[in-house]
Length: 349
Image (cartoon, rainbow, N blue to C red; front, side):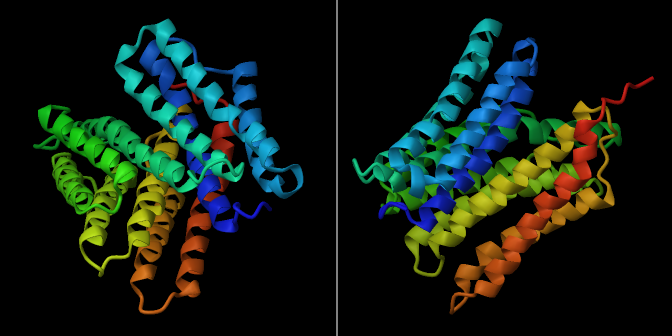
């Protein structure tokens, strides 16, 4: 491998642009028909996107052989084509409400470009690119999560005839999102400034209050709902830990980052994938024992990974257990949902 392309950078890049990027793409492509009223991207167009994603992964696995320039040529087109595809759909459907999503994904793609500039030994911007993309994803989680978590929760509460319902999108939500965006700008440009830490705490407080307004404590009999609240809660935890890590020596920054990545990102990905898989194939929106086990495994993985840096001495055992639990969660999801996703949709009578 090139000297400036170490195993840690590979891990960071592939978990962010490979893993999270694929999940983000799947969600966006599933949501576009609902946004625009147009048919979903399918056939050759979908095949092209899948091929470009695979090509990017091959590029990073073989970078020592093919070199950094070929790696960039293999990897960069996926997100660029994705952005162009989303722009085409939004313009065709005149769905201007979701333009912020296009902007966020475009900035996410820019972060990948900055990583490649360092791999190409042009300028040291990899850390900036990774930070930019990671925190842009946090805004995407807050934006999309702020739509689906209260909506799905409210529908479920109505279904069980609950006396209280989740609060709908309003002024407070816009204030919380604005605070998060301001924090992200500060975190990308001035990550070590105390003001950035204070902005993180403010954003964490506002999004914690936002989460409470959705009344997640009333949903713990249905795992498909409470896992959404846990995923969003990890975003709150990450913001608070980032703030505390900037103001004290007690909280390790790596704990905050893994609260965001292993906690918020991974948990939200599984929460959305399970529900979407059931809903879009005509299945009953009810978590099985297997699905609940997936949620428990990812929660264990997140807790352990966030906890490990707090130990007096680094513990590879804790990291290994966390990694095994994380892997087991996604392997079990694949085993349980492969038959669902590869069989015909159930037609309701």
